[in-house]
Image (cartoon, rainbow, N blue to C red; front, top):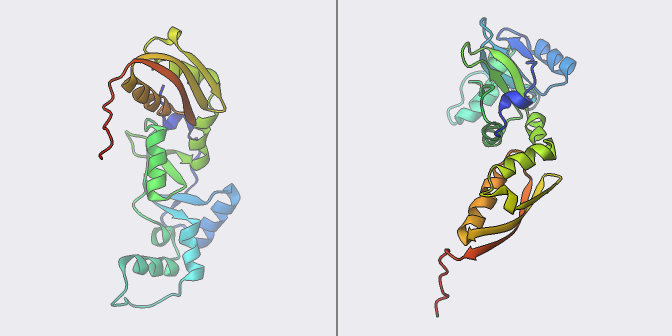
Length: 218
């Protein structure tokens, strides 16, 4: 059974308004022990994120007045953040969000691709913030009970009674016989996609060979 964001998300979102001061943002991060806060508009819809990295620009980037002709867009944004004093000036926008129905696997891929540690969770109807998904929340899928994993794995087997499944710390060992050799590859890949599976150890035999074997060229 796929695990969605709603199954692991935090129900609390640490937010600040667009006019929140630098000091207010630092205080919120310190008070709630978070590395980023969501910036919301008057309707509680996320418009950006201020992270610790955004705030550090104040310390590491010199404040410059006036545009530099040969500056890249990224460098210009860094200098603007270094000069910023409100959430609207400091934030990275737009906010990258997910909904409670987003598969955790997709959310994890989004975090990896965008190099971010948390995602605001929004109500799909109102667009308002309803929670937060942290990296540690995503990792909770790897603590799913073995019985749940076994049920999901058995659902993928062509004849569950003909196989033997063992799960240890998220590693699935599956023994049995399939009709075609190609089924071994397909079955292992399907099991790997089960939320919470760390690895698959196939101990599978096949009755018929249907994989093309290319002979070595002389």
